[in-house]
Image 1 (tube, rainbow, N blue to C red):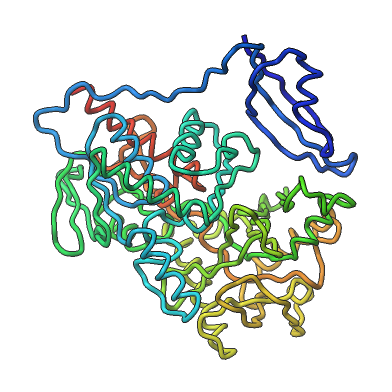
Image 2 (image 1 turned 90 degrees about the horizontal axis):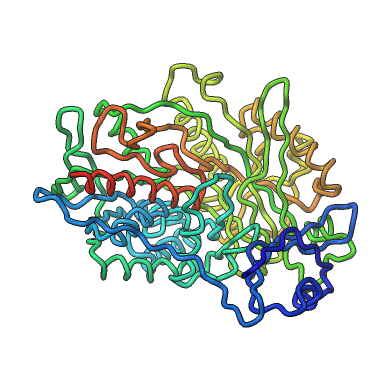
Length: 516
């Protein structure tokens, strides 16, 4: 019988297998369940493991994810429709075909190979393709968020999501690392394999087919209509359009679908040299080959105002990206490749935006603020002779509200322009982000440095709206048959949680089909 050992602490210079032989002299095969690095100041860095170890001559049983399939489809069956091929949409479609349910998937952009070409043109020449960019196209925003799979949700579906990603070519280590990440370079190889599996198993995929509107019955959805005017009818529509699909959100509100404003977060993105972050986190072990590029997670909560400032989407050894979806707006994001070997480290530094306090009954208040900041950032770059560049300010200049803005080299493929971000942000945002950065420097001595710089604006961390749904059926509160799903509907915040939400919605459709 196998044994599970938890919280095994091993010095970075020690060997795991030797340690296992000490714990269990006659052990058989083993597998790592979890691995993390503990680099707290009170001791030298070490690895922390949870490991399952088999007895000698025993085999480890691998976790299986066999799914119940639908016995018989109803006589009047119409294929479920999935709108959007980001993590939520792809995993909804995957769940359908694995349960024996054929489905139809619509994506406004192209397959990932064509999408990547469009993004590269945008970064190099500033030519924005509003179908194929960092947010739209096969793979969704997750394709360019470096495949980070870190999540705070507790879901039974997480092991399934990781298992399937590995089956399609993701590194096996994502199943046990505490900060799992596929890498932007490797996730681009995973998505096409997933696509081919879907097509071979009953999923009909339409690229360059934007859904312009839904087809409505009495308090229900009966299908979708593409921009070309083609209509597809279904009793089940999973809407997974992502956090940037303002056009669809506006259509839903205009059509009477129940939508609420929700709190979200916005701010800037900070970039240091990776060597500096390694030095802060690992100290004299900064160059140790086993440790790799250090990351961080920082949080400051002001109890008086109940406003939080925190780091988000930290990209060790990464790149700062221009990721807008509108021709007159600038949005910033970050990514890392699998090896995390860029000389730079970046992370979003964002503050919580309380919808009720700031916007009251104006459901679109958050969307308006987001749009305003993005257009202001674009205008600021143009005002200093830029076109496609990211507005950038040195960290010390920002904190001191100084006009002296000496920029360093940048990882951004779009280039940078010196802009006063301290003046670009509304004062309430500037003050809170400044406060947060100063608090972070107390926890990470050296975080505030003349070599660090800030980029604007980090405005797409999540959607400022929620398409409300029934907590049991997951259908829209106002329209039966509509399943608001993922980040764009306000029910996820990252690749893993979006994928899990896609699975949840598909499983609810499966339950309905199985009961008829």
